[in-house]
Length: 602
Image (cartoon, rainbow, N blue to C red; front, side):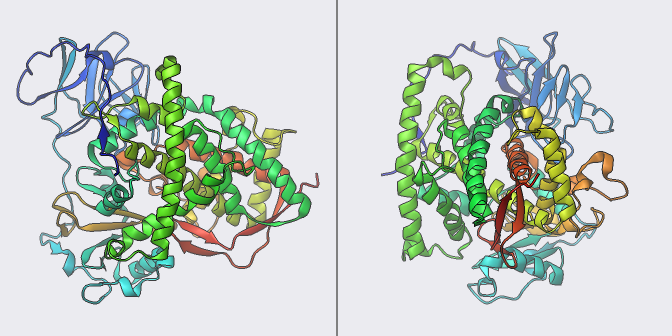
C-alpha cells in the first residue's frame, strides 16, 4: 500500500511568540520576524498574490509585490545586494526603499508592513489580481468557436496525430489555423497557443490562473512519483523552496568539483572512443554525464554511470518519463482496464528504481542523525527535503521524496543531454562556429583537459552562446501543457476551469524577434558582437518563465559549457550519421545523431 501524501514526524516546540491580533481584516501574518533578514529575500503566498519581504541593514522590514514585472519570476528566489533586490531571471534590480527598477521605469507595488511581537504583518489589499488578457473585441468566443482541425466524435483529433511528431503536427496546424486554434484530445477541447503575448501571460499567471495539466499530477500520484515537476499548490511551494536554495547560483562554487570530476571521467571515456574511431550516440554520452551530475547533487551519491558503476540508473531512469508522458496525453486512462507491454515496462522500471531510491533515502536519514551539523547547510536536495516541512509542519512522505528524486534525475538527464546533443548537431553543420568554440576552449583551458574551476567554466562565453542558439532553433521543450485553474479569458476566448492550453515555444523564437531567424548565429547572444542582428531575449524561454521558472537553469547552463569545452577542446568531432530527424517523446530529441571522435591533431 502506498504511503499517504504526508508522514508525521516529531516537531520541535515553536519558539515564536503568540502573535498579536491583526491590525485589520486586510492584514495578514506573513512571517516570523526572525525569518526576515538582510541576507536574502523572504517570500509569502497570499490569496491576494505573491509578496517578497526583506530587512535593511538598519533593521527596517520592507514588503513589495512578489513577482518581477518583466516575466513574473518570484522575487523571493532572487538575492539581496545590499539594499537592492535582484531578480534571478534576467537580473533586474529594484531599490528596496522605493521599489523602482534601476535603469527602467518599472516599479514594484509596496505593501504596508509592521512588525509586532516577533511577527511580521503585511496589508495585501493593494495587490489586486492581474486582469485577464483580452483582445479589443467586445465579443468573447467559446473554445468551440475557434478554428481548428475538425476531428471526430469522442476521439477528437487523436487519430490525425503522429505522436512521435506531435510538436511538428501542432506547429503545422498553427500555420493553417493561426496562432490560436482549438484542439481535441479525446473528449477534452482546448487551445493551442503560438502567440507570444498570450503565452507570456499564461506562464506569468501560474499557479493561480493556469496550472499544469491535471493529468500530470493525477498520473504522477497514481504511479507514486509526485515531485516538483507535477506538483501544484502547497506541495509545489514546499518542494520548490529547498530545491531552489540548493541549486542557487551561490552554491555552484561548492558544487563545481563534482561537475569537474564527472567531466574528467567522460573525457577518459571519449579518449577510448577516439582511439577506436567508434561512431557513438552522442546523446547517450551526454545522458551519462548529466545524470551523474544530477544524482550527485540530488542524492549526494556518486552513481558513476559514465564508467558503468550503477546500472539501475543507466537502464531504468531513462525509460520512465517518456512512458509517463504517454499516459498524460492518452485520451482515456486505458491502463486501468488493459495493461499494454509499455505499461508493464513502466511498472517494472519504477519498482526497481523505487527500491534503489528507498535505500538511498534510508542511508541519508541515518547520516543526518549521525551528523546533526549537516542540517545547517544540506549538501544535496534529498538532505534539504528530509529537513524541510510542508505548510502543515509535516515531513514529506516517501512517495513525495521518491517523486522529487525522480524529477531531478529525469530532468537533469533528459533536458540537458538533449540540449547538448542539438548543440553538437548544429556545430557539426557550421565549421566556422565550431572553430571559434575550439579557439575559445583552447585559450581558456590551456593544457587542461577540462575546465578546472568555476571561473574557467564561466569564461566560456561563446560556448554558452552556442547552447542558447541551439535551444532557440531546436527547443527540447517545444510544447508546454497547461490548463485553466479557474474560469478566465485568454485573448478573446473564454476558458472554463480545466480547459487545456498547449503553448508552442518554437514559432516565436524563429520569427522576426531575431535577425536571420533561421540561421545558427551564436554571436547574437554576445552583447558586444550582436551588431545589426535584431534580438529579443525575452522571447527565448527554454527554461519556462514566470513563477515556475526551472530551478536548475544555472546548473544546466554550467554543465553544458563544461561538456562542450571538454568535447571540442580535446577532439575533432564529425558527423557519422545520415539525416538527423526530430522525434517527440515528451521532449524533442535528435534521432540518428551519431558522431565520430578523433584526437586533436594539434
